[in-house]
Amino acid sequence: MVIYSKVNELTEKMISLKSQNFSVGFVPTMGALHAGHLSLIDKAREECQVVVVSIFVNPIQFNNPEDLKTYPRTLEQDIEKIKDITDILFVPTAEEIYPTQPTESYYFGDLENVMEGVQRPGHFNGVAIVVKKLLDLVQPDKAYFGEKDFQQLAIVKKLVEQCQIDTTIVACPTVRESNGLAMSSRNQRLQNDQKEIAAKVYPILVNSTRLETTETKLIVDYVMTEIEKIDQIKVEYFQIVDEISLQPVESILPDQGIIGCIAFYVGGVRLIDNIRYQ
Image (cartoon, rainbow, N blue to C red):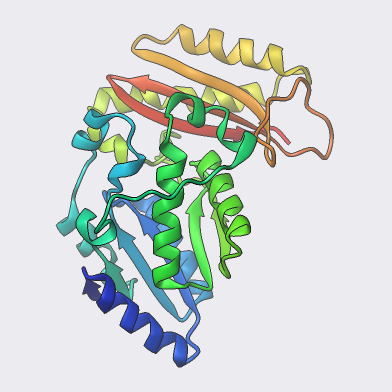
């Protein structure tokens, strides 16, 4: 594995690889890597000749300074985890990615006016800016994103469409701990007992798919009522939405992609997850 920290070094390498017609798979991350990230890299390894991974904690997508400050940074451990399955690792500084204050502004319509977009103003514009920069640098044939961040995945797909970027976005399934907790870099901030508490959310989501109703209000009420019984969990939102538009739906119809998305806090750590209904 070759490690680059400079934009010009990475650019030169990618130009050389593309001139030789190597297929390139790209996995952008913010580090604190776990098995979910490794599954994305494995998928890229299966489908492409060259695998590029980036580790960059993007400051402009954090609307909460404390969240940025406490975001786990484990570069040495990350390198050890991926050195045998990654060809190129890009680890730039913020100054390297943003030599000047970014001024780009992206608009994703209703996709960004719900859920995370409401709770984290400016978040998705920050995501879009860095993803666009990274895709322009790497110019991958395919880029791999996890479905745990379902709204982010939709935003990235829309970004690629709007900017006519010649990269296929590959969605990969959420990877979970043995207790069902969705793997997340933020899990590292949880104590062991808090992880067990957080893990109680997913079985409730699964059970909600088995209710004998198609009315989403009843499903939401069930989920909220059950989670409220658990001490130390505070739900920020739970919405059942169309998987394309991300707009709330009133009922679950056959052959309609429907996703339930949740954000909740355990011990001050914000976690997200989702469940498919159709």
